[in-house]
Image 1 (cartoon, helix red, strand yellow):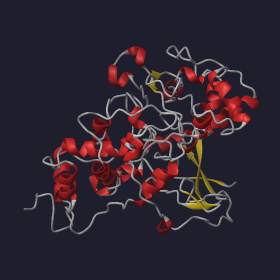
Image 2 (cartoon, helix red, strand yellow):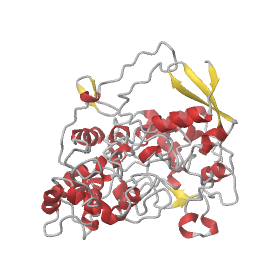
Image 3 (cartoon, helix red, strand yellow):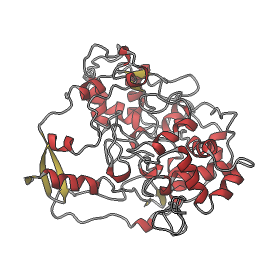
Length: 446
């Protein structure tokens, strides 16, 4: 492997360009069954100068529409009945409108960024390609983009638990400077009113209300609330009593999960369902280690630029072009300012976990093996470390079986959710939309 030294200016150009790349995963056929999750931008052999792409054309993304409301209204094996807010009863029209908004890049300041560009359906409704989210104009963020699958069950939202409902959560990425960058609630509503077609859609979904701050958030929340996925192989075995649904190794991994590993103390299981999270926050040592620089092993990072082409980049240069200058992500403390809440982050669900890498609030671990090894070592010691985090002393076989158990948690309908998302057209700027370069603007030149 050849290594070169890259300059700060060259690195800045590289980061600005690559940070805007949207690397999708496309539909492939296995034994005549369409599998929508998996790498469409296939990088197998990319480390070699002889690499030849096997990636699929973007035009081959063929989805299939489904009626998502059934997933919100009907209980799936392994999950409890979903509670729908009384002030936002779910309807097919709300879901359809919310899905359109979710994929519409015009809901960002410069018409380039949609919700789906951080929560990529083919990648488990998260982003497998980068550790932390990148917004408009390549603006970097501190945290990993969490999956929105089954997010309707969360008591708290965001890694630091700063929101309590999907409806309220919607506006934060829309208005955040480093995500979608819209300048205000009113600007967003006005822009939607000027985009052809949205007035009728809002009037149909919300008769007598039309486009406003509340209906915008209720529509997107309705789509997110319909993304429910369970009835996994584990569910069929554990709750459905189908002994053949999983292998003996998965069953042994589950024994590690509830026993020696004590994973169940945070990723909870009830008698008739399993959310695989406790709706609480914990200090596992990841946030502490990141704040103290303990996760940085070397002064330089090897970056691959092209097949067979690598450069060594000084970590100080990488930091210098990072727009997020905050070095210490304190988690829940930033919300409560309670000193005991330093480095506490929300417990994520383990459902579909094998599809939603990278892991932890900062995306520091790229594989389930990394996560298992981290917990096996007892996290990172600090004065506020959760008492639930201890060295596990798992054997190699126990680690393998635990991973197999985690991989058994993929929901049965996951490819249906992805196919439905792929069927949705992406909203791109047209000549009829409000924009400084079009005849129709936001009213500033009238």
